[in-house]
Length: 195
Ligand SMILES: Nc1nc2c(ncn2[C@@H]2O[C@H](COP(=O)(O)OP(=O)(O)OP(=O)(O)O)[C@@H](O)[C@H]2O)c(=O)[nH]1
Ligand SMILES: [Mg+2]
Image (spheres, rainbow, N blue to C red):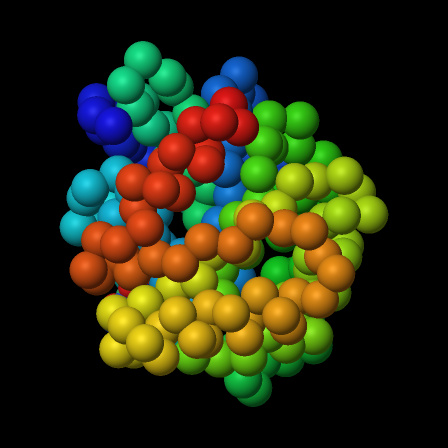
C-alpha cells in the first residue's frame, strides 16, 4: 500500500461543519486513550498527523483526514473518545450529539472501526455501540489495540477471550499494535475490500 498523500481536511465541533465529500469514509470509534489517533497515524505512516496524547479525552472534535492510497482516495475520520472519568452531563450530551450526528447521517461512511484495548474487557459501552450500529445497518469492525503490551501467548489468549465477549455479534475482529506496526497492513486490506 503506497500512501501518496495524507492531510487534515477539517476539524469539526458541530455536525453542520462536516465537509461535503465524495470520498468514502472510515471512522475510528472507541474509549478515550484506546489508541484511535495512533492507529490512524500508523495507517498513513505519519508520526503525528492525528494528535495523540497520554491525557485522555484530548480529541473532542471530529477530525477528517484526506488520504490517497495507491490509486484510491478516501477519508479517515478520528472521532472523539468516550468514557473519560468526571465529565459533566453537558459534556456527555455534546459528545453524543456530535458522534451520533456523524454516524446516523453520513452517506459516505463505509465502516465504523471500534477500537478496544486488548488488555481490557469489552464493556457495555462497546456492546451498546455495536448493537446501535447494527440497528442502523452501519458496518462495524473491531480492532484490538496495543498488542505490543502483551507477550505473544497471552496476546492470542486475550484475543480469543475478547472475541467470546462479543457473543453472537458477527463482526470481524483484528489484532493490531500501532507502536510495533502490527496488523496495519491487514487492516488496510480489510478497508480496501470495503471501498
Ligand atoms: N504501547 C502502545 N501504546 C499505544 C499504542 N497505541 C496508542 N498508544 C498510546 O496510548 C495513548 C493514547 O493514544 P491515542 O492514540 O492518543 O488515543 P485516542 O484513542 O486517540 O485518545 P483520545 O483522542 O483521547 O480519545 C498514547 O500515549 C499512545 O502513545 C500501541 O499500539 N502500543
Ligand atoms: Mg485521539
